Every structure is written in C-alpha cells, then in structure tokens.
Length: 456
Length: 94
Image 1 (cartoon, helix red, strand yellow):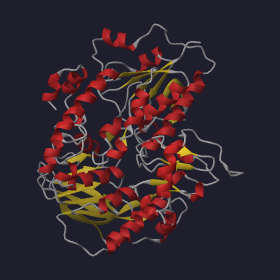
Image 2 (tube, each protein chain N blue to C red):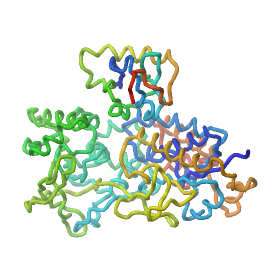
Image 3 (cartoon, chains in turn blue, orange):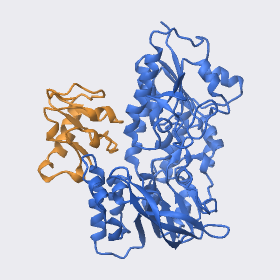
C-alpha cells in the first residue's frame, strides 16, 4: 500500500515529536516552517544562557535527517499556501504554529513606547527575524516585568545579567550590544497572586538567586499565607510550590547585601496603569487579595495602589495563537479547540485537521511536555488514516508547487548551510553560534553565498 | 546539576519518566532506569511524573541518596536506551 502524506505546519518541539511518531508509522511528512530556520522556541525562546536545554536540537536534527521527512522553510501558511488547499493536498494536516502573540493586559498606557510583550523581547535577544531592531529603552535604572512564569524570570535575568555573563552565548549581536550599554540595575517582578501560585519553577528561581552580583529580594509580608493558600501548599502535588516557598523564605531571611543589580519579587501585585507622556515613565501597581478555595484562588484589587518610576515594562502574562484563516480559534483561551489533537468546531471534529503544542494546550509546560502532546496528535492522525485509502495524489510534490509560485524555500540542505555559517561566525567570536537575524542574510546563507557572513 | 534516578525506582520501574523525556536519556536494566547526564538536558519534565518520587534534581537530593549521582552516570552509558514506556515491575502498578 502507498504511504499516506501528512503536512506539519511549524517546526518547534511538538512538530518534531509528532513527526517522529508519524515517521515510525510509515507516514511521509512535509514540515512547513515560516522562518528559514527550524526548531521554534528552542531557537527563539529558550534563553541563550541555557545551552544545555538547547542541546535538544541534536534529537530534532536526527528526526530532520529521516528519509521520510522533507523540510520547507521560509514558507508561510496563510500567505504562500492556505490551510484549505493543504487539507486537500495531504492525507492529514497538523498545525504546530505555537502561540506567538503576547496576551494584552488591558490597562491604560499599555501601548506607550517602552511597554513590550515578552514574546517580542525574548525574540529580540534570541535573534528572531520578526523582532530584530526592536526599540528596547534601557536608559532608566528600573524596569518592571509583569508575570510570574519562567519567561518572566528569563526576561528579568537577561535584563540584570552583566555583559560578560552573556558574552559566550548565542544571544543576538544587536541585543548583546544594547544590553551591554544598559543602565537597568533594578528589576521588579509582579505576580498577581501569591507565592504559592507562582508558576515559575524552583530551579529557575534558584539559578537567579545564585547569580554573582545580583541580589534577589522579597518582602516577608509578601510571603504570608492565608489558610486557603496554606492548604494549597500542603496538597500532594504541590512539590514545586513547596520548593519555591522554601527558597523564597530563605531569600527573605538572608541578611540584605549591597548589590549592583537587584531583583525585587512582588506578590499580590498587578499593574493598574502604565504612566508617562509619550513613553513609559512609570507604573501604577494595585495590591490584590486572594479569594476562592485552595487550588482555584483568584486575585482581586484591594483598592490600594503605589507607583514606581521605570523606563521599561515587559508584559509576560501569557501567549495566544494568532488567528489562522480556515482554522477555528478561541479568542479567550488563545488555543485551537480540539479533542486529543483533532480540531473541533462547535464540538464537532473537522476531519483531517489536527493541532499540537501550544496551539493545542496553551502556552505552558517544558520541552518534555511536547513529546506526549505531539505523540497524542500523531496517534490520532494514524488512527484516522487506518483502513482508509490514501487520498493524496501520488504525483504531488510540494517543491514543484512552491517553485511554480516562485517561492524560494529553504530545504534541509539549506538549513545545514545556515547552521554551518552561523557556527563559523560564532567560532570567530568565541560563541557557540552567531545567529543571522536578517531574513535576506539567512536566505543568502541557505544558498551558500559568502555575503551572508557580512550581514549578521 | 544532574537529574538522578534513585533507590525508589528499583524493582518498580513505572517508566512514566521515559514517556516525557524529550532527549531519550533514560537507560534501563532489569530492575530500574538511569539517566545519562551526557544527554539529559535538565528540563526536569520527568521529576513530577514519577509515581514514587524516585527522581531528584541533584540540588534536592537527600544526603543518604548522594551516591546515586555516580551510579546514574556510570550505569546509564552501559545500558540500552529506553524510549517507550515499559510494563511496570510492581504487581498492581498502573
């Protein structure tokens, strides 16, 4: 029997784990990626000072090298191809496009220059072509990060890192230069709920608390727990919360030491407004009180507020999947409605359309979370294909279709050339890699042209 | 800091960890699994899914279990990698 063909849109972790599972079942996979480069948030989300986690690309490279898989980079679904035609051309279509849009706060002043989404800020320091040249005002001593997840801690850590800490990483060159000249010395991190509900992991907090030259501070009153929070902390699955709480108590109890760079953690604090004329000059912060039963606590403002002067506010309160024509969305959750990875519309499964990763489950979890997630979606595809005749045209080739539309795609070999070029540039600079951030430079490198080296 | 499998896995081997490991760094003998620190990316996805809390961040490892850092590092490379869930060894285990 002829092998079915499935297209996967996106090339982040969930895309690769879905591909791996499909390939094992003998399905042919075309992986379509908007950027010239693969690996999604492993390339453009994981912080440059976390090289160990980035090493997971070695596992993805193995999948990328599989004979049953073809990579089509620099091809945008919604512009170069649309969802409806892909659904017709393939036996299944898996969307793994992530959640790249920053969730808004919905407060006054949010649109002022100096107010940035974490997605944009993280993309900027990681060399994502969409965010190159981002205006990041680093002239004021104080910056505020809104949010209490690992991304918020990444942002705080990068803002406070002395330049020499980042020198030997693959941080984007323009971001490294801007951060080296930064006058930010104090970052305030705001969590709307309490320390028990903080969603960053104890490992990330511990890393920050140990960095040379950076002092982490938290007010003891911010760590006081009401009875419901105490019950939540004592729940069987709250291991991470207990570790985090222990660490926070140690931080609060440590004698204050003078430090050139400081991180202040605030709990039960939400932004009420960004202040400033023409640009962010400060933030109004509202105190909150927690309500509701353990494990389902919500925060409401008490009416008490205080202002902090600052020149930069980074909002790290979640991400949403941007709408994609032809695909149902849910504006509230920012996810695509689905059942075990099968896309649904008003509760009914849309045959042949699947979703995985952040688009499927929302912006949470670590890289490992994507393996069962991608596998579950792939198994849904395989189950639906079983016992059905292969529908796709055996003569169809995506490369021919793209060539007909004059779309210059980057294949596996093209990515290998980009990779080699970036590693060579990095070696000259004493870094693991010097990312190319200009799409033109990436495409030149993919074609093996030397001028790529001149425009990083 | 390494992530290590400890005594509680011995004779149990649920392998929930294997299903979430993105790096394929688990290796098994007939009794338990071990993490190869050379391939582990320290994402810690495996720690909360272990039904018997056998997996620790080296940072949180109780003193009595400190020998397991060395055991994981030396045993894992000698054993075959496991990338799929195995039947648990304990009777009645899920």
